[in-house]
Amino acid sequence: MLSRSASMAGSRSQRRALGSRAQMLERGRMTLAKPAFPAPDHDHGRCTADALAHAEEVCKQRAQKFTPIRRQVLGALLSSHRPLGAYEVIDELAKSMSRPAPITVYRALDFLMANGLVHRIESRNAYLACAAHDHDATSAVAFLICERCGLVGEIPSASFAGDLNAAARSSGFAPKLSVVEITGVCTHCQKAA
Image (cartoon, rainbow, N blue to C red; front, top):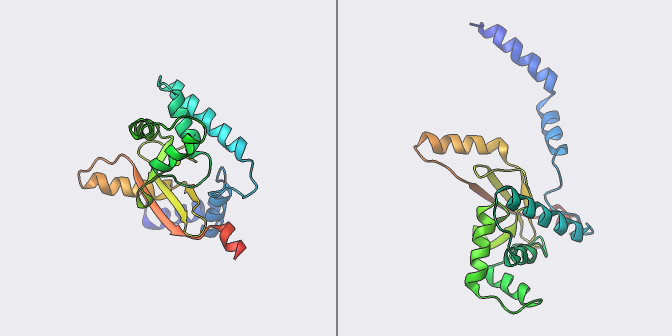
């Protein structure tokens, strides 16, 4: 068994190897795959194509059918980085096809949510295409909701997901998915002000 001083010395050498807390936080910020909020001039066509290709791959791996209506509903949600209510999805689809029945859209949304391709923003009673493709069903998802422009960013939240899941399990609860919604002002709106 290590003495307290040996344990503390080991801990200090680990901290030196990793860097200061500020350096570790900065390094964590720099390793994000993409920013929470896309730049206003980003290639939205590419963004949409990548998300649809990802959805196709997920469905293929899970032997699920990515039907035309599921693709169209996801495409409607990908038309912007704002959450849409089910009837807004129907309105978006009605621009390019005959108006679908609400039950059809809700079924497609249920399928997309079950496969991690869409999230529901509870506070807005709306749906958002998933921006982060690297979380599983037990991950905590954190949304940054801009009060000015309405955009929603998704950020990795693994650092607190473990704590939340452990706390839930310690009370005998089996967590599936934790969603955290944080309202504020995005970086683009802050710069514009």
